[in-house]
Length: 283
Image (cartoon, rainbow, N blue to C red; front, side):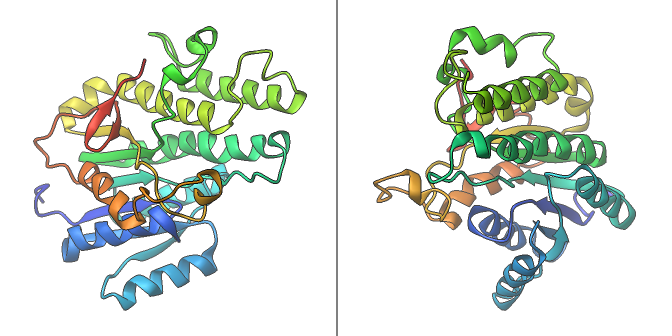
């Protein structure tokens, strides 16, 4: 079956609310009857409620239980996708752990890194081998994920010709250990744990794109990170005093859906952090 006629298979993680839910809604609308969109969620009860909400809107998402913080859960999803469909066309790695102002960073950092960073790597490890020709793999990050937000002494941990995905995971574990031990500031790490985490995510996308360049280019596969901008959600409101210019989840989802559904002939963006449909500088 040709790529244009084959049923498109999509998966969005962290999709029971906010941006993730909006991404599922938008993908269902764009793909229509020619696609199957999986609403990936750790909390199955909330996932069922989100699925039913969208079905009440006339859309037909399917529920997929996935906890990106656990190897077995992510691999089980990959196995299910392989068994049902043989491959996948769109992966949006959106699941993220919230940060609380009321809990010390030292108590949150391990879980945050495990979900946001190691979870991203788990998604890559399990789902990239299933990418079909002209597939799109997207990691939802933010504009904080630029080396310009990190002290120059730490740049080699996230940039370099020989950098590996394993090395990035190690760097994030070192960062988490430094936060827990109270030595992060002296090691010149940023105060806000979201900054190194996003840098780690974008660095992982860049390494994935570099490592897969020959095959991905030949097969029309695009891998990118995406910044949705400031989005008005429960997770972001506590951190920003002025939300008057924040986009709604559905508004923010539009550019990510554009990125996830670029036509087969598209060759760019590739290995970039994309915001408002334009690549952002890495350095």
